[in-house]
Figure 1 (cartoon, protein in one colour):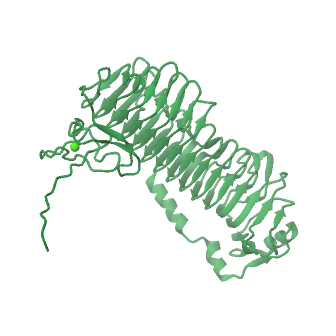
Figure 2: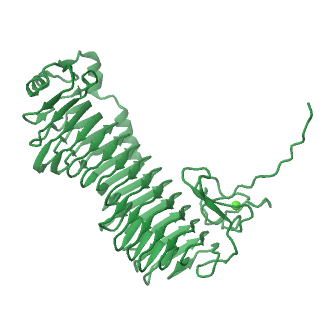
Figure 3: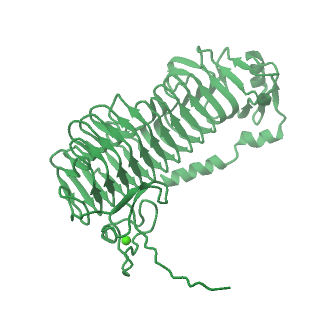
Length: 499
Ligand SMILES: [Ca+2]
């Protein structure tokens, strides 16, 4: 997949033929800013042209027929600081880009397009389309209300909002979204059903659902998913890779998962790295506030705090319906201050499938609350929940329940969970201790320092600090227990030298 993404990046950086030629040609300037004036400009445009506007003030061009952009050119609606609005008047699509066309739309708004019973209310793209500083607003269709993409779509510095239905539906090809906002779409902000997509620096806010990955592969990087009213991101039979992203304040009152979950697909893969899950809430029976994994889910170097559920059989991260060899693997991550207050089978990490295969390594689970159990819970027979090099402590009520397997080098403070009981694990509060996500530091003298297993610990801690460190200064570098590796600071005597 990396090879494919690098190839795509290279493609994206190549100058488009239309851009090169546009440098050579004088722009076609639209001064009669209505359907007839714009249609005349489109009719005269040749490959490489740029169409601009000088409308003498703000302008809305209501298209009287869908405009087919069938050559290679740029439409720049800057209009001397009053970007042009193209409207479908809620009766027709605004733009169609056919196979092979290379089009750049810049500094304009596409709104009120409609394709009742069809696809692509605002824009249908079967060619190579770039949107640069474009608003796609309040469009409607059966599928792809804002944009329906089958080929190559690149979205930069743009706003895809208030569409009735899906903001962008991508059925195949490539989709790139950079530094954009996807907001208040009534079903899904993005709906990926094939091909590959790369989303970066983008905020999803207040959609019903931010994104669905039914098929295809999606990279979500440096992005924020906040304020969704149903599910943040849902994965069906696709592959999702999340890194350096935040899922914050998503609340689901309707279904099983608030932030990130797998649907009932045949397969589906999620990886999460260096990301935050904060204050997500799921209020229904069953599911998860942060991550619901039904197939392969891998979580590394991430933080979970302030997430809440109050239905029965719920967890902050819940694993269900995994079929061997699928598994939920969590490494170098912190769970603190989450609550699961339902009436049964609640836990921060909840395995409730008889075939669950959950592996936790160097995880810190501390200071969470729950009704039945607050820490680790295994609510079915069969399967396995194995915990290694981890701290599971100060969770009320209870640190572990069900069949928890001791992978070694765990440090609970009280009986009831696997490992060697200690009086106090010496954890600091959740805080910024360096690195991309907050952690709970090991305080000096903590029994977790140098108590892990070098053969099973990862090569860094949650923050990216190298493991193992010689935390107690005895000359032996040994991994710590939990998500944080203590760095011993030697007392250095610096003699005072008088000048
Ligand atoms: Ca150490």
